[in-house]
Image 1 (cartoon, rainbow, N blue to C red):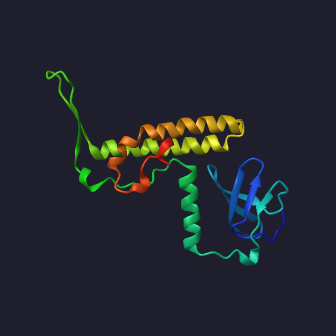
Image 2: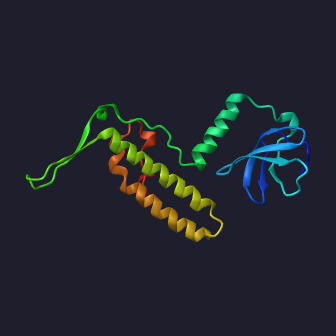
Length: 177
C-alpha cells in the first residue's frame, strides 16, 4: 500500500475486513474496523488493500466530521441503542394487561419500560439485518429471503408506531414503504 494515503482512506484487511484510516504516525496506520474497533497496522504491511484513497494533502478533516463518521459507524455496526423519544402523551403512562377472569390480577407495565423493549427489539433487528448483509456464507438469494422475514417483522410491529414521538422512528413493513 502506498505511504501517501491520508486520513479517511477506506482500506481492506484480510482478517479485519473493511475499515477507515482515522490517524497515522510515522510507523502505523490507525484504522477503525466496524465490529472490531481501532487497530494499529504497520505502514509497510503488504496485506492492506486501498478501496478508496484520500490523498494525504486532502486528509485534514474537522473534529465534527470525524465524530459524525464514528457515530454513524457505531450506529450501523453495533447494537448500541440510539435514544428514541417516546410520544409525550405516553409519558408516565401504564400498559394494563387485564385478564378476562375478574379473579385474576391485571399486570401493569410502565409505558416507558414497554417502549424501551420495543426500541431494543428494533435495534436488534437492525443488527441482524447488518449481519445478514455482510455474511460471506450466504448467497444473495438467501440474504434477500432473510431480509423479507425481517421486513415482515417490522410490519408486525407497526401497531406500536403510536408510541413514537417522531414519525422518522416508525416501523415500516412491506406495504408501508
